[in-house]
Length: 255
Image 1 (cartoon, rainbow, N blue to C red):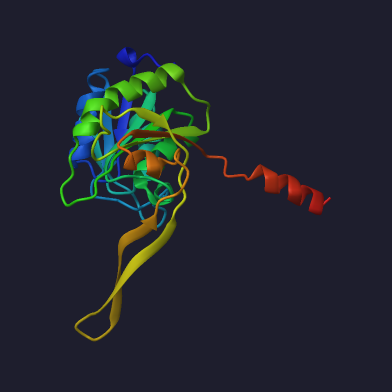
Image 2: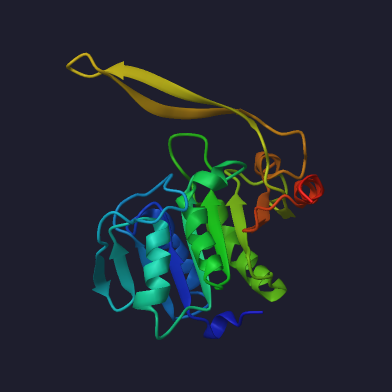
């Protein structure tokens, strides 16, 4: 259990340090504690996944005593935050987001928002990733702003084991009667990425990865279904990717 009133909170994201989602998250975090730090990418890093920058040096740009921009990935930000910037005063919890768009189903493997929480979890700091789903051209942060603090307060009272992060997604519109928190599984969907082919001025082809076309899973407890129903999905994600049933099977096959 974390006492948020006395907690040191680190915030990061993948949309960049100047994104509206991280500014909202910082404001909401300050309702719990005055000791809030922001260490985030200097530029948008959506889709970066859990990637580290290894082929060039990283730079940390100090904006003020508790705001730092890193010219790297979300994973870089959390790693440098915990082992460099906040080395002498480590955070009690890491909050990542609020992402502009949902991180549902297979999205979590691409998401820099989830990756920031993953890096904190690997370094034994509890972490929660937040995303605000939207389907149109404009994003509305209302649901996240309304419910995020209650979700955090309940989660830290419950606590969760090491090696597990919490992935939270807010729906675009609340269900009739208001959005409720639903503990959800990570959904699986049939995906068909739209790949657009174009020609450059020299006649050479290039490609844009476009909209992800998908079919919703049948499982009503899947995060994708929960969001569609106008509720808040909360999914515990384990960093142990081992499939134990196959592990046992292969152990018998290779005695």
